[in-house]
Length: 195
Figure 1 (tube, rainbow, N blue to C red):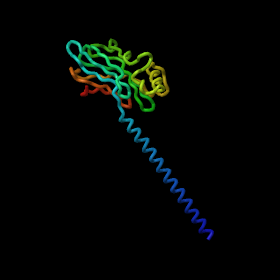
Figure 2: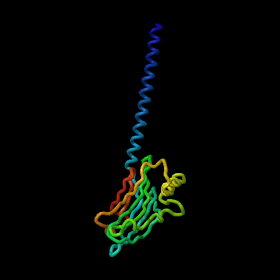
Figure 3: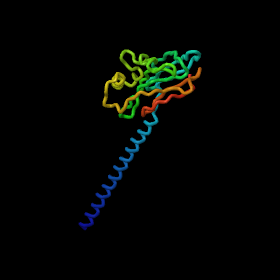
Figure 4: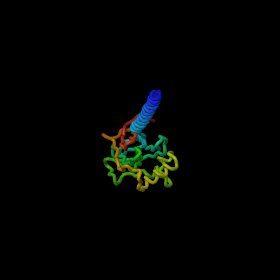
C-alpha cells in the first residue's frame, strides 16, 4: 500500500511538472510570437516627412514644400524657386539601434544646381534650437533628437548617412510628390495625388 501511495504521489508530481513545463513553454512561444509580430509590424512602418507640389515650370520651377512631423502633422511650408526640371532632396538619415529611423531634410537642388549651391532647408524646421519635426514626440525624445540634429554622438545610433532622393525624368506642373522613410532608413520619393 505504501508503494502505491508513493507511485500515485510520483504520478501527481510528474503530471504537475509536465503540465507546468508545457504551460511555461506555451507562454514562452506566445511571447516569442508577439515579439516577432511586433518586429514585422515595425518593418511595415513608414512616415512621410515632406511633400511638394510643382506650381509652375517655365524658366524656373516653383515648388511648394510642406514639412511634416513624425505623426503626420504639418510643421511648416515654404515656396522655393529651383532651376532645372529635376528635384534633388538631400537628407541626413539616422537609424537607431531600436529599429527607428529619423530623417532631417538638408538641401534642395537640381540637375543644373550643384549640391554645394543647393538651398539649405534646415532653418525651416530648426527654430529656436528645437527640431520642430519631432517636437510632438514628447520632451525627453525631442531633446534626444535635438542632440542628434546637432551631431552629438550617441550610443543609440546604429548608423548615420546622407541620402539623396530625386525625381526621374523631371517634375511636372500640377503634380505632387512625397518623400517618405521606411523603418530601416530607406527613403523613397513618389508621385502622389493629394491636395
